[in-house]
View (cartoon, each protein chain N blue to C red):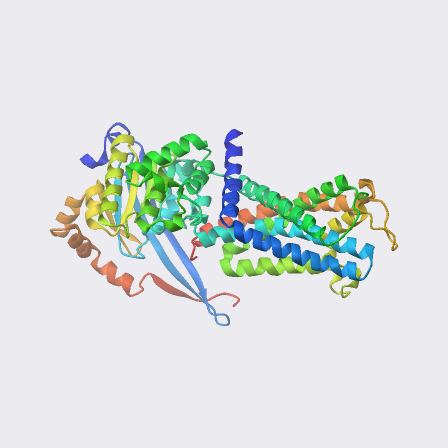
Length: 271
Length: 288
C-alpha cells in the first residue's frame, strides 16, 4: 500500500514542482481568469439583476473548476510528449490506474485552489450575499461532477498519443464544445434546437443545474435560500452514473490506445 | 555462455540468461497521401536472435537506422514485437511487462527530462515511480552522481542550465537509482566530451564488476564498445549480421580494427540501408 501511495505521490510531486517552476505563468493565467470572470459577472451587475449576477457567478466558478480538471488531465500526456519523458513514465513499473489517479489528484487539487482564488477575486467586484447558499451541497455536487470530468479527461488524454499537435488541438475543440452546450452562462434553451441534444450528454449541464438550485436561484426573479441536496437528486444521479461509466471507460480507452501505440511505435517524441 | 574475462564473475556462477531474443521481427508502416494513399512498410528488425548472459556486457554496433534503438525499445516494454520471442531474466515479452520493468533501467541518446526541474526533482520523481523513499533515493543519487564526476552542488540546479554531458550523467543516475539488474544503454556517451565519456565508461566497468549488472550497450564508438563489451553484435538493415568477441570479429573479417571488421562484414547491408532497401511500398491502402 505504501508503495502504491508513493507511486501516486510521484505524479502529484512532479506536477507540483512543475507548477512551482512556472509559478509566474500560473499567476498571470490566474490573474487573467479572475479578470475574465469579473467581466462576465459584471454584466449581471450592469443589468441590475441580482439573479443574473448570481447565475453568471455560478457558471464562472463551476466552469473554472471543471474545465481545469479536464484540461490538466487531458494535457498530461501532451506535456510528457513535449518534454520527451513519456517513454520513461510508460516503462516504469506503475499501473496505468495509479498513473492516472496521481495525475487526476493533482488536477483536482490545482483546480480547486484556482477556483477559490477566482471566487475570492470576483467578490472584490461584486457585492453578493451568499450566506444562504447550501455550501455543503455545492461541494458534494462539485466532487461528483469532477469524477465525470476526470473520465472525460482520461479519454481526451490519449489523443496526443496519436499526434502531439493534433491531439492538443482536438482537446481544445472538445472543451469548447462542452462550454457551448452546457449552458454555463445561459439556459440551454437559448441554444439552436439542433444543438440542444448535446447538452444532455454534458456533465456540466447537470452540475450547473444542481449548483444553481443550491446557491438559491429560484424559478422567478427573486432570490431564495439554497435548496437542500435532496432537491438535486436527479442531477446527482445522472452525474454519479456519468462518473461510474466515464472513468472506467476512460481507463479502457487509454489502455487500448497505449497498446496500439506500442505496436505502431507512436510513443516516441517524434513518432 | 561466454568465457571472456569481461563477462564478469556473475555469469560464471549463474546459468540463466539476462536477455534471450529469438527471431525477433518488428516493422513500422506509414500511410502517405490522402486520395490514393499508399502504405510504406519499414522493417526495423528482421529475424534478430541473440543472448546476453547475466552479468555480461554486450555491445550492438550499427549505423543510424539499423534497428538498435528499436531493439532497446522492445526490451524496455515500449514496443510490442510483430513476431519472435523475447525473454528478460526468463520473463516473456509481451506478457510479463511489470516484472521486466522492475528489472530494467534505460539510458537513451537524448537525455529526456523535465528541463525546468532540478536534477534532484527529476530523480526523486523517478525514485517515487519505482516506490523508493526520499532519503535513500537522494543518498543513492548523490553517490552515483559523485562517482560519475558530477559536482554535488549541481544537484539542485535546473536541468536546462546543465551541459549535455551533465544531463547525460543525470540520465545514467536515473537509470541506476533503483539498482536494476539489466541496464539498456542506447548510445549513452554520444556527444560527451572525452573526460565525461571516460567517467561514464569507468563507472560502467565498476558497475558490472561490483554488482554483476547485465548491460546491453548500443554505440557508434568502436573503441568504447571494444573496451566495455565481452561480446559484440553487428547490426545493419535490421539484421544481426555478425556476433562474437572483438578479436573473433576482426579475425572473421580479416581486419585489423573493429571498424574495418564492421565495414567488411556489414558492407552490403550498409549500402542497402543507404539506398532505402529497408522500405518497400505495400500498395494502395484498402478502402482509401
